[in-house]
Figure (cartoon, one colour):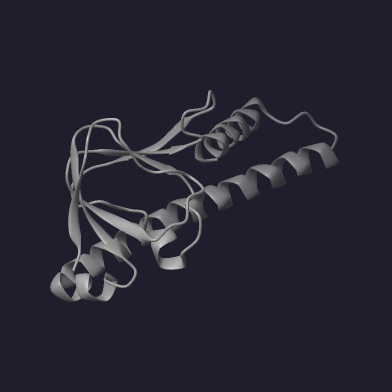
Amino acid sequence: MSNTKSFKKNQVIFFEGEKGETMYDIVYGTVGIYSDYGKPEQKLLTKLGPESFFGEMGMIEKLPRSATAVALENTDAIEITQEKFAEYLKDRPAKAYTILQHTSKRLRDLSCDYVDACVAISEYVQAEEDGVKPSDALLERMKKINAARTKKK
């Protein structure tokens, strides 16, 4: 069915841009998800621990990985292929709900970020149309949005 893989500290599990054919369920350890891994602009997007999933987007869609996954400490994770995904969920029905919660949270966070960015842009454009200088608070919000964008990039 699925098998448990062991990764040593600092071992790359998969690279951004690689074809995604598997996802992982962390049993033990911590995994860092990075954009631009190994480059000067490298960004740690998130850290994941036991009971967390990663790689599901690539596995489900069979598209290139959107980030690089690295074991931040010795880590064990169940490797799940697309072909074995249904069987994995059949053996662990509660995991389906966990995966949906995880995906829902990521989508909700992304939606909130999108709305915040749209509102800030609208306020900036309105200030320009009114011929007034954007407030310092608005400029700080826009800097924060840009920093988050470059962090997630």
